[in-house]
Length: 338
Length: 266
Image (tube, rainbow over all chains, first blue to last red; front, side, top):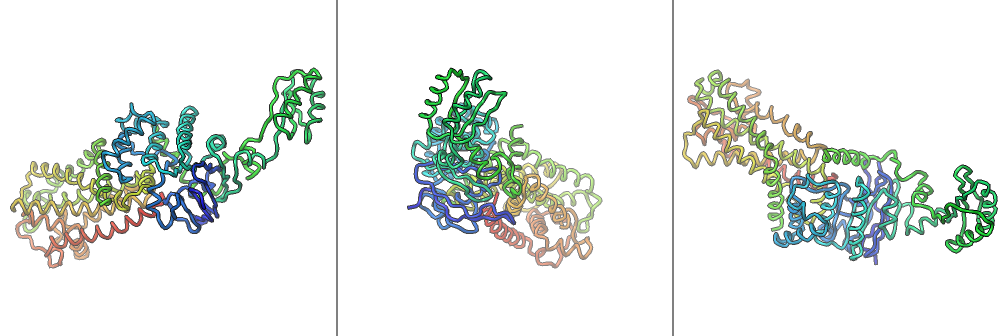
């Protein structure tokens, strides 16, 4: 039984660029998959194929139990899409935007009106409901865009970089909204360039690069693949570095690295928190005063680097159509900010 | 049913927008009003139409041409509007909704039709002020305006296709306008086509635009004295020619535009 979102061997080429080069995905119902990758990796193309906006050259896609290629209209009734930048009509008010989308989801006018009121309330836009959307801040537009995607409470949601370009406060707010949504049982596919975001929101993460899923698993599984944990200690006195290194060497599964000027020692370990406690006791018993000690797990940044050989934020060459598109979209956002 | 409802929802949206950007309508009026005034006072009296070179004859002859040129400018409006929707991601949103496939474009062209009608009303008032008169019954005059609206509606479908094909709204505006100038000038709109060199005359006589202009002149009673329509079929049967051209353009460009919309890669 395939999940709420299922893709097998999706291929899409634009000219010479293979934007999707055989993508397989399987998102169980009620879970969140984070599609993580740099600009031009193929994330947006994957979302466009799954949401009936783009016809893949080959491969199979099933969303909410419906074949995307054979029953696109039925799929559209079961999905909500929130794009990379807020797709709302800026001359319409927030209320008018939501009513229009409701009616185009084939609701009756009255029903669409009532739903708009609910959504404006839920997304804290009631005060701004009757102002044209062009007077909204970036965060408000994103919320309106997300509200528009939720008009029919679709069982499957797609969000393409929902927080790109938002400031930290607005990002945090949007995360809360997304978490609420997911706790209600919605299946969500979310693309992001932010490792922190995938870590925070997604149950499962698929790392995409050059049109392929190069790794998939939970955040912990991916981190485990990159190598184990390590203990980091900062000692208070410079003369304690040597003794501390001896102690850590006894626990470590590899060489201890020492940064003299920051008095920081790092050693790869296994054994987690229990081992950390032992390390602290041992250092204490030798009278070594410490400023800081922590068990560090690899971040998704480390994961990305070790999987792809480049960091996530890096702009890749040969991003092709998608890369270009993003540039123009960023431009358009600048225009609207003025 | 959903196709009609969806088109109306989209048309309503575009009309709300027009109401909030009144300068679009106003700027759309300045150019034709300028043409009415300039052609009437600058060329009036020096351009011979039929056997008459009187100012009044040219004035009445001219208006159908300017009305027709004005309605074809709906092309640029529709094109720019749809290109803007593409650029801003709204077309993606619409395409992800379970709505009728042609409704986004139909709604836009219907809203443009309303705008064209408003423009024509204002323009007709200005024309009357500078001395334009009709000499046929009210029904015929209305029929003439009906043909103009149909032509404008047909051209907004050309605009829809242009809007879906270009990358920016700016490109859609210029792409929707530049070819309109040769189209509307190599026609009977501003001059008596009988006075054109043979080669241009043939183009002018078969120009879809000329058919509507000629039909309106007949329906408004604005044919100048001593005017002999050429033997070309569209000039002998301008009302039919105008209807056929407009319907053919709508069918052809609607089909192409809706197909393009369904495949729009954004």
